Amino acid sequence: MTALPTRTRSGLLTTGALLAATSLFLAGCTSNEAPAAEEEAAPADNASGAPAAGGGNANDETGDTVTIGFSGPAADHGWLAAINSAALAEAEKYDDVELLAAEGTNDPSLQISQIETFINDGVDAIVLLPTDGAALTDIAIQAMEAGIPVINVDREFSDPAAARTTILGDNYGMGFSAGTYACQLVEEDGLGAEAVIAEIPGIDSLPLTQDRSQGFADALETCDQEVDNRVPAEFTVESGEAAASQLAQAAPQIDILWNHDDDQGIGVLAGFDNAGRDEFKYIGGAGSANAMRSIQAGDIEATVLYPPTQAADGIRLARLIAQAKGMGDLVQPEVPKRIVLNAPVVTAENVEQYLPLGFES
Image (cartoon, rainbow, N blue to C red; front, side, top):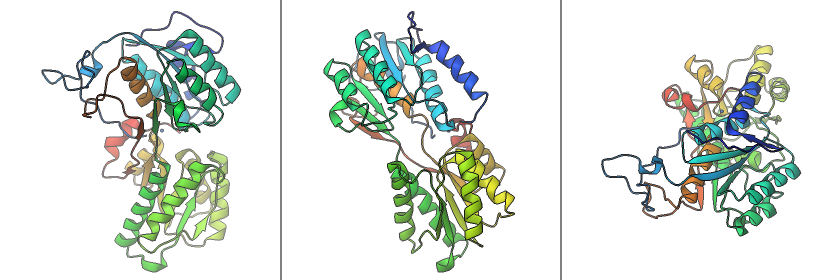
């Protein structure tokens, strides 16, 4: 269990207070990723992270108490809300972690001031999901130069010197997984060269959207397919419904549709429902619990995970680094410099495995 900080200051919340705030927010919105493999344990005094005698997880054994500062985004999207709540819940599992959690924000200037406070407080490590990776790079370098390891989550800094470790989802891999599964459906359904494949991405100007679309196109190319119709949305329910309405008018027949984001997917499905269209096989994105329940009910075909556990993994890594421990399943006695999480396809065959990691959207 996480030791609650005894200090509360402007802009910073104790773990318990932020959990309460998150719960209140979640009561009015929806949330979403894939299960992280449990690490083999290493003895608390074993920097190699090797399994403890007797088969226990030694990395989970209580070690030196460390203070971790966490700063994440405002919980204005189901996936982002899940990122924050999963990080706080992970810290609660360890009685040797004191977590200082800053209030979520989409303001880079405010987030910079939060990191400055962590530096002044002399925390042992910082877990940071930046609102803007480039904008937070300089302050992250300042933390590193002060001897505080920074764990960069999801949105990369513009300088590798700004982070001790970076943990990321795989946007290109997410698109490639969706495209590979679409190719499988084309073959199973005997659609051949006449298959009509459509795509509803998020905001087109974002690199993450461009990476997802490129991965989707590259995978389709392996089975001689391409995207026939494409209408971008903006990661919101409203924009998803508008994009679906536009797509329904432009394409009289669709065989397979990939929607990049399960939050906007609520609107996408509503838009097609309003148009009386359900002839296609639908693949979602991000891995919301809502989408997974729809897979169980047979209403949609699949969704592709973009793990909402990244910040929770960041908390674990920050604790290991601050305690000079390694990862149990690696021979190298240190936490890796860069970790990219997998983007598996969730279908009716494996949905039970991933549902516990889904977020409400």
